[in-house]
Length: 127
Image (cartoon, rainbow, N blue to C red; front, side, top):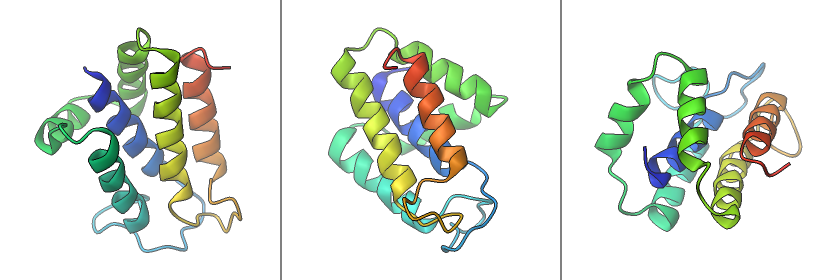
């Protein structure tokens, strides 16, 4: 897996985390990702990973048995990246988390999103 795919997958996993209450429009067919989060992923793609293929993303994302396996593969792919690249990934994950108002949380980041981002940040050695 390359950097672009790892970044996009971790961002989308952030969007797809389950929340107790959704007060934004959900993406059609989605159980927790909002339209705002999907739009933000599109922006991140255009700004950060413009050469990444959505077909490759969809195939790679669906190819994992679980979210945990996906996360492990992404973290492994990012281990050799520079600190700046790892920080960029975390910042993009935060952008996704901030894209919609979930759980009536004023910061926009649900507890599930916060814990996931914190976990990935620690696994990447960013403390």
